[in-house]
Length: 321
Image (cartoon, rainbow, N blue to C red; front, top):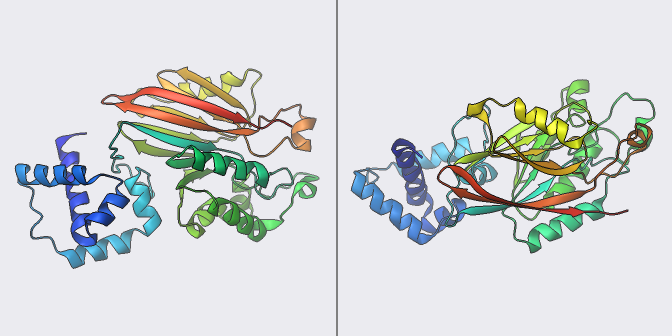
């Protein structure tokens, strides 16, 4: 982090502490008292002025710009506003973060399993994951495909949104989501942004974007990816082509890809790549196309150093039928 951005981050934390108090700042930015003291010392040493802070203006600016969920997202490194290219980095007392990974829940489908999702939530809580990411197809959506309506447990936008809010609210930690091709059927038919609307209804949920979304963290980026392509004969081939599409300067340190309902880990171009599996089981349409579904979820732990990801641990929790 450059000296300039470091000063800005220090001022942001100290300004927040001046308005809301030290205890709230420690909670929102997930730092320890020692870190806050270090920031105060650094501010004095660098001549950063905070004594003349207009508290009422800061309060107005913060409350008018962000809600509680977005403040937490910023503290965790999430990109919470459209076009927001620079966000604060996560400030750890340690050098790692543990994530739960979900994808392709397809809530609203008869082949979605609340039992499997609840099992994932219980394991996330037991393993003390810090955030959960969801790489798209949160809902089943409604297509014009012949017979699709008979595969639905919940019909239409309202029913699927209500059920998805109920399911996502149960997530025990902050959850960051992108939408997928099934979610966007509502957008294509009537302009409804269902995953964004779900995130607005769930305090600890954040919508990161269409098809892909970035979470800057430490000195690297976690990229969530969905896509509208199909399965490849070799599971790794699709992931290789996604990785090849990144130019050098935009490469993430970690890529988590949904859409194909496949589980796989690979390392390519210095990117740790997870194909996220699915919560939804194989549908009749998938069976007719001879497409398997790998049902399950992941827990990953990312370790950081000054140059990015130093170590990466991944564990798949598969469901067997």
